[in-house]
Each structure stands twice: as C-alpha cells, then as structure tokens.
Image 1 (cartoon, rainbow, N blue to C red):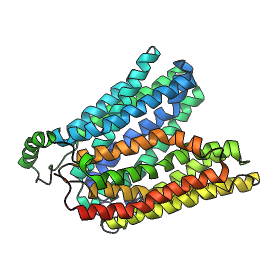
Image 2 (spheres, rainbow, N blue to C red):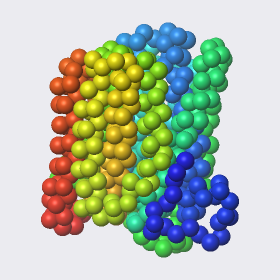
Image 3 (cartoon, rainbow, N blue to C red):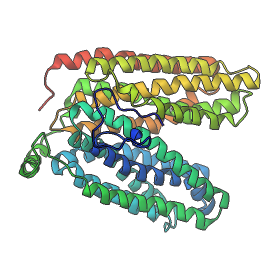
Image 4 (cartoon, rainbow, N blue to C red):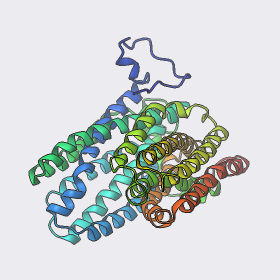
Length: 434
C-alpha cells in the first residue's frame, strides 16, 4: 500500500521508524479517523459480499423486488443528505454523526429479524437514509477536526484505508459465501451491525478541537450556542448557484463508478470474448491503483483552480478509458482482456484525480460555518449519481457498441472540463451567501 503523505506534511519526529510506521499518516487525528474507517469498512465489505444472496435466498425476495427496494432506499439516501448536513451545522457534526451511525448499525441488525416485504422496504429505506446522511455529516466532521490545508489529503488517505478495509471485509465474507448457510450469513450481517455500533462509540470519543475555528476549551460551547441561530436560516448551499453547478458536474463524473461496477462487467460478459475472470481482474486493478495513487493525486488541488484542473484531466482520462474499453469488442479473448484492463487502469487514474478535485472544491467553495449544509448538498448529488448510474450505463451504453462508450466518454469529459468555468464563476461571486 503506497500511501505516502503529501510533501507539505512532514512526518512527526516522535513516530517510530519501522517500515510499518511509514505507512501511517503523520497526523494523529487522521490516524484515529483511519482506525475508525478501517473498522467500519471491514464490516461493510463483509455485509456487501453476502447481502444480495441473503436477501434473495433466505428472505425469499425476487430480483425484481430486491431491485425496487434498493432503488427506493437509494432515493431515501439522496433525500436524507441535505437535512443531515443542516442538522450537523445546528447541533454539531459529532453528536449527529454518532446518532446516525448508531441508527445504521441497529437497522443493519434488523435485517436478521425482518419478516415480510413491506417491512424490508421500510428498513432498507431507514438504513440507507441513516447511512447516506452519516456520509454527509462525516465529511463535515473532517472540516472541523482537520486544518483547511490538510482536509483533502486526509480524505485521500482515508479513502485508501476504505479500499483496504473493503478488501479485507470481502475476503472474510468469502468464507461465509463458501459455508453458504443461513447462520453464516446472519453472522456476517450482525458483525457489520456491531462494527457500526463500535464506530459510533469511537466517534463519540473523538476529540473535536473546536467549531467554526474556535480554539479548544470553552470555545466549543460558544460555537454550539451559535448553531441554533444559524440553523433557522435557509440552506445557504441551495442558494449558491456556482456550488450547485459544481455539485452537478461532480455527480456526472461520479457516473464512472457505475461504469466500473456495472458497465464494464456487463460489457465483458455480453459483448466481448474476454474470460469472465476478467471481471474480477478489473476490480483488482482499480483497487490497487486507487490505493497506490489516491494520496498523490491530491497534490496540486490546494486551490480551486488547481482542483478544477484535476477534474478536467479526470474527465479526459475517463473519456479515454471509455474508448479503450469499447475497443475490446470483436477482438480475440486474450487481447480483449488486456484491452479492458488497460481501460480500467485509465479509469482508476481518472478516478483518483476526479475524487481529489471534487473533494477540494466541496470544501473550498463552502462557507466555513456551514460545512454541514454544503457537504449535505454535495453528498446528495453524489448519492443521486450512484442511484441512477447503473440504469444510465446499462441502457445507454451496453448494447450500443463503441458509439455508446464514446457518448459516455464525451459526457464525462464535458463535465470535467466544465469545472474550470464553474470555478471561475464561483471566484467572481465573492463570499458565499450568508
């Protein structure tokens, strides 16, 4: 795992000099967040690996019913992000995050008790709303506990940890899949639920040095007293035109995840002669490259102009990736596999650049006293892309050959390149709306 911190973050002198320690982030707060993230994502990987089979085989849901429930849950996740962010601004990110993470854990445990389809749909919507809401609040918490110049690099490091945790969790989940028993699936889901509850406790114990730039100590209480008055105002992010445009463009760039998780596997199986094992290979290539380069990709995104430039490069790389993947059609099996893997490698590089750029813009274009509102709106856009992305990619790309991939590539390139004008508009607007 190559996760060297950016050059601006010098390692602390009190860190041990072992090889393992060089993989640790020099900032103690980021290290605490990394431990929390690792625990959470190992549990998530465990649950994700068994969830669909548990719901279909042991709860008796058809693929159509499960798809409807997950779509409804995705919509609830989109709708929950904005109010969750506003709640963080009003009552503080940490208490809101603790409540939402604990609710996600309890809801996840509830899957083992649910009886009947309506109850399953309701529970899925509750879990998705709490989970996506907590994602928005978590990003606002990062703005509180990390200095402004280290937020994006910190998030990049945590994303590396996320990939590692998901890999570990999926590996453990493979054991439950091999055992293939109701008890094994229930154990995996309950382990995920327990990880959420443990994470809630760890977030509760996380020290927040102060809100709104207030110094540690009594300043935190002062900031809490200021929040209710702020919470009564209209959401400033929803009145910020440039930020809404940046959010929309970032959501278009996020279609790349549906491309990787849905489009590429379907393309490999239905439209190429590549071996089916290539599907697993694409995920491995993506994961390894994200782990290796996500932190490095944050360099140059320290200001909005640099972040927009990273998004532009991301869009062009993603467009190139689409074209390369599309060229696999009609080629011999071995060559098709190589071509697809090369396309996914381009996608991974575009992904890390796009993530670094959009993270930076989501913080840089926000008001320092309204990170919850801004992260809530930004997260709602990303959640919407994750919800509609599979349908867009499967219907508009698969089955249309190279032309479908070219159209998707043009859309991604356009979104990335449009970030520059959007950021220039944001810089002309002056201070964010109060």
